[in-house]
Length: 472
Image (cartoon, rainbow, N blue to C red; front, side, top):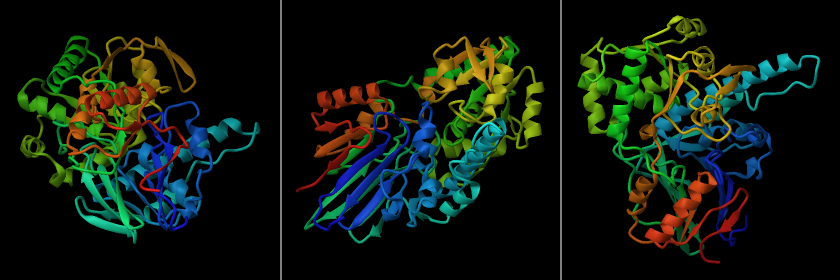
């Protein structure tokens, strides 16, 4: 890029949809990515993930990640395998999570390719994994951790500061300053904002000023149910399913963030005496590793989470939490016909052990499938939420007899009001606000509200849009 060329942002993902976060910023002599995430959920997601990048990976100087969810980091191994040689910056906690998330993702891709190739034997070309375990390990060697709230300089014309986004462990809002001739432009990327007042993590850090803003809109068109009625509904669901109907509760939960929050709530309700003698099984090796990692980062906890962690340490036996690590232990859960709370990934029911638990549990009227997270269009989780009477799992059509309960108050994403609470922290309007990371109706609703409440200049970019910023 010429040194006199204007700064520009190209939107390669999370534009017009939620997943695939990837923003390419080109500046004076420097070119970098914010996030490099996988597309998930849609029928064409695999094709999108396998498509060549719309830029040359070896032209990218560095990558900076907002957090460790796969739709924000999941294509980093592919980027590195395709020629990217630079550093991948993240917070310390995100760097630790990446070693779990990317290796698990690689394992899923390798396993999926092996299963597909067994089906295709003698009937077509073999497919290769999106990336391998070795490629994930190679990519992890390029990860560099940076602390919250301190400047670092990945390029002579660029400085960055990461602020706590309160979404998942290690999640960051990115403040990026870029020299532009004799001037300097500041771009802020919200990443995924957390819902304030939620347990474990601190609330999102308020940014006071920026020239340009890229803000997420996952829940830009709705409000979450308040936490108190959500906890009331959780208590009702537990008592109705386990006590009254003598069934099991099956929870598809994201391994990072949602699993740890639900475990927190179950301990919290036990501490309050609202539920008793819970038998919880965490059937996801990745979620187990993340849970243990979360415990090691108590410095990032809020005050209430620290208090509950202290109680948990002193009250062994109040709640039974069992990790099932092996396949045999996971299969053994299917012999438990009542009284169990089984949490497993993936959170949208697209892969992983949760599919086996749904295959065994959906047909039983006494069971409850408890949906506690966002379900993207095209996923099995979304079909269950939308009331499907029959679903197909591992090629087998199944009747849905279990009760499907959705509790929306546990989302780790900021709802519309929370997004505005964060936007209100800016002391003056950005020159331009780019609304991303949302389905079209959510982004459009947020844009209308921003126009009405704040009168800011906004753009909803589409995939591939290349937008210049700063003075010409």
